[in-house]
Image: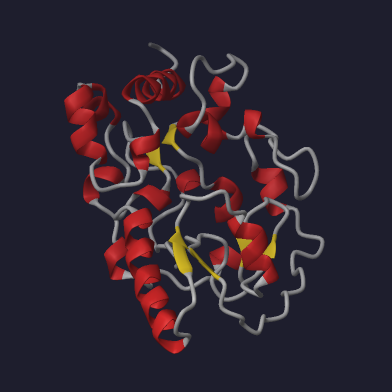
Length: 242
């Protein structure tokens, strides 16, 4: 499912005092949304192939979604390590249906990145030591969502106003830039998570933060880590005279 929207890119800048939350987290929690759809597919498969076993997975099992998606002909793994689809770009949610039913596989899709290095060149922290290789220790998406503890001082200025994820390497990709937008109304951005005001987020206590992220896929960011991200964004966006 594509979550590509027509909203401005993170690098385009927002109103003064706002910060960036990755667009995958603007709408409803994709885990629940895809799981419901996969369960419908699974029940359909069970009716078509009586006796087959199946299981729906959305980031809930040790499955290499991108690799299997590439093998299944849904696209290719680009230089930014994301799955790229010629029609939909890379801003995609991937769901998996595991089954023992015998199916005829599609052919893999050839790689279509060519000589383009837009994603590698645009990364603020240089997180790609080579095409197709990501150093998560330098990735803003990893640092703001998964990393626990302090963030290296040298990396903080490069994080800009990003407090939950990073979209830059996908936004600059020609395949993603020309992809159709707003395909799924259920993924319509929630107003309070698109370009929220930094001062509003700084006022949140633990309970307020839980309410702000409710219904989104941001549960992976603890309150303390979110506060750390806000503090970095505050320093990066503070006027030089302050």
